[in-house]
Length: 332
Image 1 (cartoon, helix red, strand yellow):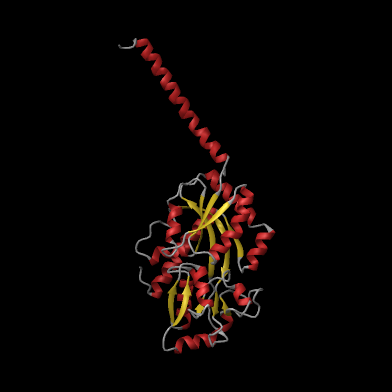
Image 2 (cartoon, one colour):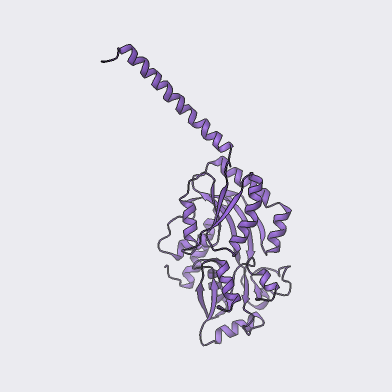
C-alpha cells in the first residue's frame, strides 16, 4: 500500500534533517578527536635494528615526549631494505598522529641509491622537527695496526685486499660518509652492509670488520672503554668527550660531516596535531635531562621548525644525490 504524499514528504524532511544533523556532527567530532590527541599510545618507528644511533636517540627523546603528551611512546624497530621497510610502513600509516618515524640521513640518500623507492621523502611525510646531529668518527678495531689516521690511510692504500668496513646498510649515513672518506683519502675499503647500527657496531667490536665511520652516538662508550680506537672526528673542533681524538682536518683530511636525526609523520597529518607534536618536541629538546643524555651520547640538539626541516630534507636529498653520482654508486 502506498503512503500518502503528505507522509512521504514529512519522511523525506525528517530524513534530510537527520542527514544534516549527522553531517553537522562530523566536523565537531573530528575537532574533538584532534583536541583530545593523544588518547592512546603512540608508535615511534625506528627503521633500523636496536643499538644504533637512531634507536638510541629515539628512546631518549621518545620517553620524554611521551611524558609531555600524557601517553606512552612505544619504540618499534622495523629494520630491513636499507631502512625502507620501516619508513614505508609509516608513509602508508593513517595520518592521525599515532604512528611516527625517527629518521636520519638514509631517508634522503635512498632516493638516489635505489631504482624503486616505495615512498617520496619530500611528499609522503609531514615534518615534525629536527632532533639532533652528531659528528662522524673513524673508529677501528684495536687489532688494526694503525695508531692514527694517517697510518690507517697508508695501510688502506697499500693493503693487498680492500679493508672491510661496516655500515648500517646500503644508503645509511656510515655508508655514504665512508664513500666521502675514500674519495678524500684514496683509501681502499670494502663495504659490508648490516641491518642497522647495533649489528654493524657488534661486527666491528668482534673484528669481523676493521673499521666503521658512524656518528659518535653508537660507538662513543666503546671508544671510551678501549674496545674501539677513535682515529679522527669529522667536525670543526675536537669533541669534549674525546679530547684526545683529533679532527680529520687536523690530520690533513678536509671533511666535516655527520648524521642528523629527526621525526616525521605521514603526509596529511592534521595541522593541529602536527603543531602539538612540534611544540612538545621543542620543549623536550630544552629538557636538561635530555640535553645531558644526548651530549653524553655524542649528539647535539638542533631544533628546526617543520618548514625549515622540510627544506633541509630537500637540500639533503640533492646533496647525497651528488655524492652518489660522484662516487659512481649504481642504484640497486
